[in-house]
Length: 72
Image (cartoon, rainbow, N blue to C red):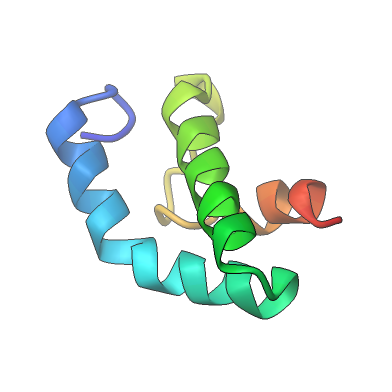
């Protein structure tokens, strides 16, 4: 559902991984507002990602690559 940009699938994925993403961002950034922004930016990048680049093995397989580009 994510690959086809289905909003319901995206909402489910976001709800499922929000805590993990936020806690990871907070551990790195040490600011709640910055961590929230980082999670929103990552979610937006995922939503706007070209579907040919979306990983087929696991939803979070793209995260290490995207996260490394977002770190200060």
